[in-house]
Image 1 (cartoon, helix red, strand yellow):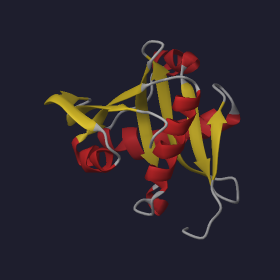
Image 2 (cartoon, rainbow, N blue to C red):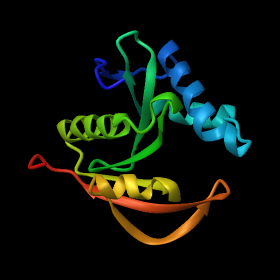
Image 3 (cartoon, rainbow, N blue to C red):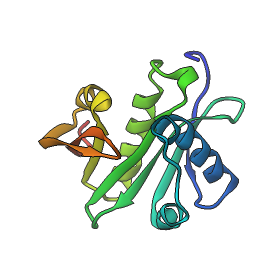
Image 4 (cartoon, rainbow, N blue to C red):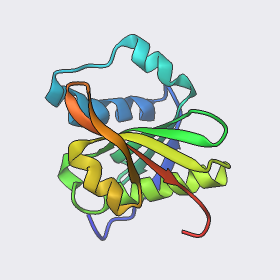
Length: 152
């Protein structure tokens, strides 16, 4: 995968690409916990920003979602990398590109709820842990934040 050309793209809600992102998110994040998406959860994503990282064959390899909290802050959600390419740096590429997009849109802060297993990844990308760990969807999470700026 390292020699592969990757394309970072915004995904339109309710498009075939959005459906691909739901399938990837379900397979990696939801199914292992015995969870599915409700119709209400999918409808609530209509005003979110969706992004994907595609390989040269136009297969979705990673994706994430942003939800605006206010005019300065986004909440990053549902960050996922396909199992076949995990550990190859795609998560860092995806998050970095999404941060760049957010900065260009005028956002200054990103917050997220990281699964405990993902905390080291976000720490390596300069996110800061805030508060005590908590349980969400039955597993330990940590609130994390990052101030994004053009001097990165």
